[in-house]
Image (cartoon, rainbow, N blue to C red; front, side):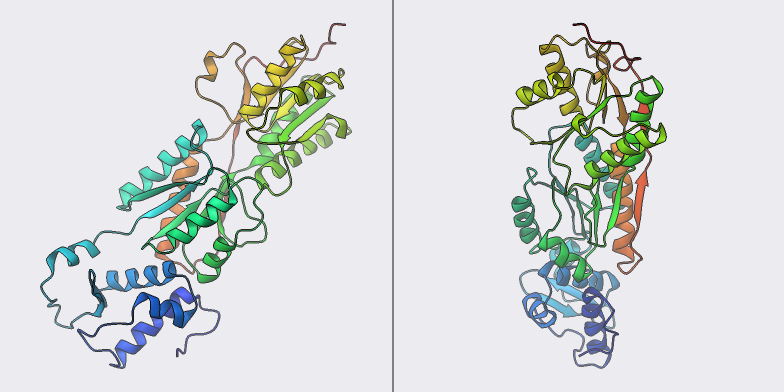
Length: 374
């Protein structure tokens, strides 16, 4: 069928096959090309891959489309059949889809804005999809998107995700997509995210430099979420930097999203009265720790210093202005969009992983340790 080497992606093989057939005049100017369904079945790929290959051939001028009728070989003289509305529509770029697990926080709002700003400048519409942090929803959305003419995808994976069949198939098909924030271990993808380990290491190192020796770590389930695994690694590395042992009793790492946590956090703090500081993996958990401590009569920050990853809106007006690790989420979105545009232009480019350095913002929630009052 094609003389392309087997290592060539299926996406490129489809384009090569159509170019070759036109070159040897198996299909002549004005001929109707096989339907997307036929090409999907012939190459055993998703429809989204076929749509992307055909869109590229349209941009090259080798193929033109008539809505509701199909794709045709372009005439050599450049004189297309009269169908202005349909031909005008093919000049518009197909959209890019962005999948986010949450839409109710500052981080994702800024990330969304960063993605949109870069894509709008490049002329790509943005299609936003909310997965509600559910892998089942994520897979269903990706299956629907495969039936649409997309230019590419940006995916912020759900928490705890280690495997997604739809993303694996897109990677095998050579379809352009970029993963943000949470890398998918074992799946070779383009990726943009923060240097989570470095950020956590700096934050916990700051607590160590103040004299804290008994530092807690609070997170949702660690296994399967690369960003949480990396923040735990940074917490442990800071202990190694200061030659401190890691006490596993100071780790609370199985909390669940959208499940009440106050009782468990109070129990955690009560059974560790010598713990003088806590590092939490996100603002939500950090604020929950603060509420639990106040409920036990623990003074913040005098008896319990607190630092967490990421900031939250209007935090500078909070009763206790928190120290936190700050990511530039708008820049993260911009870099993800730029990386995707580069992949759309060169689908076979080498896989790239970009880690953006976070910074530690010191406010009022971290002070040298004192003993808790009896």
